[in-house]
Length: 522
Image (cartoon, rainbow, N blue to C red):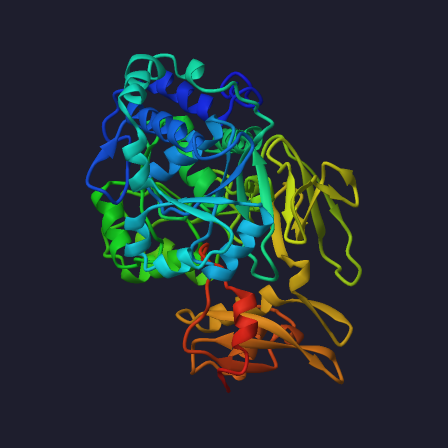
């Protein structure tokens, strides 16, 4: 990495990185950050909000304590998280789309006793009942905190803290936990991923080595900040590089978002294949004309989505790849070095190994280590106990669980998660290949491949879809046209009215397993 350009890595915390950005770009930057509320915020406003919220919430908790944050994509949410970490508390970003059980599991795993939230948010999102159903935690509402910020606090803020911010907070440690995020839990109970200040800021620096975003850019981020993609790429990156940021509360407003991108003249969009598909379907011809860079991550970019954006809007969607454990970006394509179908080259500063997997001829399982790697896991069965990263290669390595292939130029292609391979008649078959075939056969439907026991073949692949017209004959036709073996074509199709999705847009396979039997066989 360019040490001169990104000298904050390894010595800064999120708070000191914010202070550094204020010094580089100035306090008075009207419209620097916007959200769903009518007002906008400058760097000075963000610093002021961070100091105030940090001071107030420090009175409710102890140094080192894990504090739940149950809030949407708002500027106040970012200020709250950075403020907590500035006072050596650890913000734990709760996924409010996970339901009561998911949030309860997260609170248990990270030993959360206090959850910070907002009455207005809970009411608007219809989450009052879910929040109040959480056991063993105290709900604290931001609306009530404002009343605790008295005259002496305001004097401290205006006469001292705003002018000497680094003296106003406890000294920070870049290796200390900055945030706890939770894995999607799509195939089991979510794990708490502990990310240090160093890891988050290193990942920002790595991305900025590839994409030189700056004050001339305007980033639109509707990916939730409880998701690592939305937090790091969509929020911390613009904070560090000076890009203007438009935060939006949900990626699910498919009709509204293209118009917002147009009205705010946004130049950068981070999203997922699922959401990009919906935005393209609802966008008018000029809604997306201001976009210069569109990056898809969190799930495989479907070829029909790539084609639609290229043909309708003249925009080449660039695919990337990451993992929450890597804060999260591991690789990404660049406009000048784009290989459609790949997820680009690994970011600077990463070490990697691709280990062979029995039964898989092409590629192997990807192991990584680097400055953006997590401090470790919290597991449900051992709450609050940090489990440092380790793989078969030793301490400090992380096994991504993804089977990848690297070409001669260093571009990665994802074959699928090892857990999402089926062993059919003795052969290892990627379920993601089966899903890719379905997406080409049915552009508009949602599809998910899973396995069932098969007495004669060991396992068989079945497809869940929202398209009642999709047939196995059509799947076979697509597979043959693309040179795919018939063994990758699902043996049965089940139709569902709707699909359970995670907040990131990924299929919720756990919920889908529970929904088995609710569809009709085709």
